Length: 236
Image 1 (cartoon, one colour):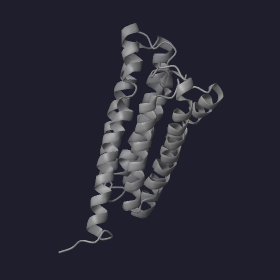
Image 2 (cartoon, helix red, strand yellow):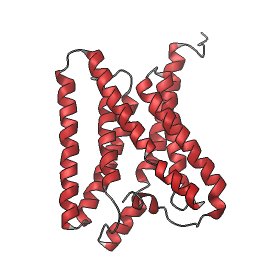
Image 3 (spheres, one colour):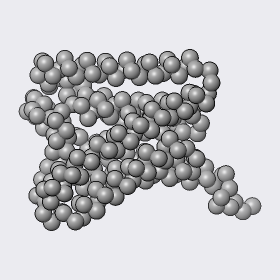
Image 4 (cartoon, helix red, strand yellow):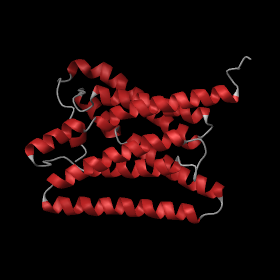
């Protein structure tokens, strides 16, 4: 029996394939701060690095993971898996950051971390209290979409810096490539699942990923070979 490319079975296959690919490519993003934390552990200090990117990333992962659960949306478990993995990575980075931060910064980051969990708890409790599944899906979907767009928009100042300095020192190639591949995978995943809350923000992420790769190709000859750590440092 022949199965057409446009059949529900094939769409489900393509969606799952894109989601699995997105989970794999996201791993490249999640491990990218490791050189930074090796330096923090080695020096026993957070120096000029900022913990805020990890706070934003943790909140984004938690909300998007909740959106992917069957309680909020249908057939989006691969969104939950990738964001659950991301939340574990971000929480680990935050624990390390807080461990080596100075006292004032340590208290600030602990407060922000508690605020993230508090906000997420409010979102979850509200979701469970709402009986209308369409309202629940739409509200959490908008929250996850806005969170993803803000995360993907964060490299805009890096893009501006690259153009101003004509150097890609602060824009590591593999981080830009991972962003592009992950965004493209979940763009396709969202399209195959007919979910605008997934394909819209990831479409934006794909475009920004292309811009970063084009800039890297154009300016790479003017850049020093160094510094994969500088991307995180530049948030401070």
